[in-house]
Amino acid sequence: MRLSPVSEGDLEELFSLHADARAFVDDLTEPLTARAQMRWVLSRWIEHWQRHGFGYFAVRARGRTGLPAGLLGVVGLATLEADADGGRDRATEAASASGDSALLSAYWRLDPGAVGRGVATEAMAAVIDDPVVGARECAVVAVTAAGNAASRALAARLGFRAAAPDRPVPGDRPGDVLLVRPGA
Image 1 (cartoon, one colour):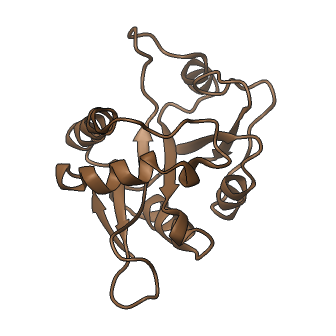
Image 2: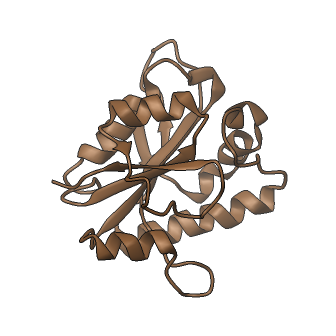
């Protein structure tokens, strides 16, 4: 795999991925419907890289692999941010109260043509384990739909486990579950 920090040059491929309903089959999130939505999201991802020195990566195949050409997906880690009004959501407050001072959120979205071929596992493992941009000593959380078996299986392969039932789920969306990979 070739991982590179997301950039403005990835906009069209990222929009294509995030507008593809097949990439959201078992997800509670709706696909994007306008390029401007992806442009806004991408600007936030790039800003995160600038502020923190790590973030989301565009995933592409390296060499002749039998995988589709172009963008295979996007994976990465980001800090769990304050909510829109500047406050912290219940999940961030709970993390601080439990001693997880540095809490990262994992994200992955894969092109449907690359699903089931180990791409997300390889890419996310590389990111989490990277000594510079990875999880280091931090706990990592992932939020996914309770019915998204593929995402939950990927998370399990990466060392995530179900959070305590009383731990709030970031975003407070009904139907989502919180998975946690403890820090070292």
